[in-house]
Amino acid sequence: MYYLGIDIGGTFIKYALIHKNMKVIKKWKKETQKYETVEAFYDYLCADIYNLNEIELIGVSAPGVIDETSQVMSEAAKNVRIMYKTYVNQEIEKRLHKPTATINDAKAAGLCELKLGQGQNTKTSAYVLIGTGIGGCFCDENGAIQGHDYLAGELSCLPFAMIDGQIVSASRYASMSALITIYNQIANEPLQYGTEICERYLNNEENALKAMNQWCTNIIFVLNTITLCYNPEVICIGGGISEEQWFIQKIQKMYQELIPKRFASLVTTKIKSCQYHNDANLLGAVLYTISNRE
Image (cartoon, rainbow, N blue to C red; front, side, top):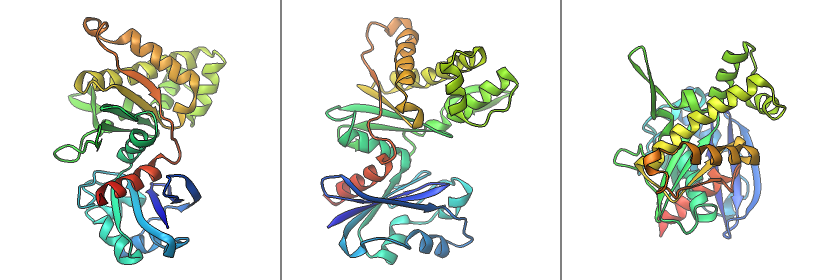
């Protein structure tokens, strides 16, 4: 028997058949399509499942705030907005007839790192996932901390600045989209991808150096906030950029330099790259389902 992981994203829905030793056996994906009805969306989600008769349980990773009953409590990207106020477990179980549990996507990634990756054997850990937006997860030794209203780790809405009397969140300053915005404002050149800016940075282009330093400083602001509010043993950084060793080394160096001086001699929190990348949400979702059945 195998486990099935499902990672629902705004662009793709990813699937993985996972062995009981937590090794991925088979992966596939399909585009996330916008549907006008809940029934049509979940019918599409549950179609084309391989080896269904060999699947023991299902773990689902999904965007948004998700409570313990699997109700989606906040809206997300337009292609998955139809999930708002639905109960994911029930919708999948009535179609696939397998035990199912659902967890927020960032919390799934954090749980994967806690159980299998860089967070193993820690009592406190935090995970910062840098992509189009910015996601987060706080863990203790038992698993992902949900918070009273399931909002713990929602770094995308972390207050970062005040502009015209309005609070502006960290996603506007510390995401990959933010790096692109910062560079385009400095260079007055409309680049579309963060990878282009990283290449220019590594080639010592002046505008890219300025943009990267500003962006990394913004990320340090987020890491310092986590350190002072939770003080975990380790903060792991995920997302595509975290696979670049130069980036992790730069963040580690700047973190040490920009820790508040009064605590500089006290802070022992380590900054690391996540060990799992593309499979983290899938594995974490399955781990969450297993833990719910124990």
